[in-house]
Image (cartoon, rainbow, N blue to C red):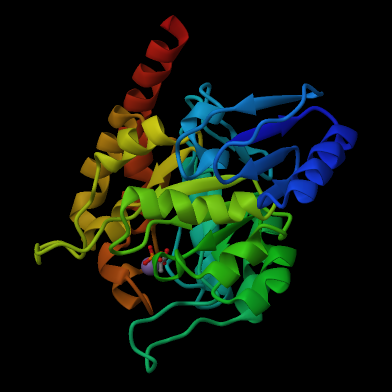
Length: 325
Ligand code: PEP
Ligand code: MN
């Protein structure tokens, strides 16, 4: 059961009533989440009978859908922002060239990992804070807000000081200490789906962030592990409309990690627009052959510009449908 309080005084009142009865509850912003049902005397609140185990992010709470804003870029309710940039920040020239190419082609945000979750401990682990400084410099030069991954709970404050949107990687989707810390980070979060996470588990992870105080969450479908070996992961394109039925949070697609193949990025990006995704996250690199990570799934600058050109009529067609509706 979800109680929506209309003032902090009514919240305090309900909380003390629940406490007196020994009822377990969780208070977050204007909401009080109670396991099970309770009878309350009339007061300045609305009781919402939400069945989903993830009430704060459930579609029922906000049937109109929510908009997540990161430094002026708005995701949700029909917009289609594109986040692009290299897998890893490798150095000043590389990130500045990437940022310029993203801005020139009409991308809305720059991505780049400074803390990298690598399968092998011997692979490049990212430049750390130096990488964050380079991202900030790229933002200064191009005006593009930045998205970067935070790998550990202890890094949240540092990464939040630089980033406009904090990425939680697939491998960390169920790192509950990290999710809780992100509830208090004061920055919107881009939560990637775990490699073998069900949609319910994905939404429960988002609920952790919301339950700890942060409602600004953008979900990212990035492919899941299946028996298929041709692609790095299997792009669960159906997850996008399925999630949109289940949650009010916007959902973006990452066709780079979903396929591991450069040639499949553009067709899937078109599909993302057509299926109603709320945006895109794509890896691009000025010289993909020389990339320190994920080069084979990165577009070069010209290919990224071509992707944006190809997406334009799809986005416009979709917008014309939304305007008519
Ligand atoms: C990334 O975005 O570079 C990344 C590591 O993604 P994921 O967590 O989805 O594998
Ligand atoms: Mn990557």
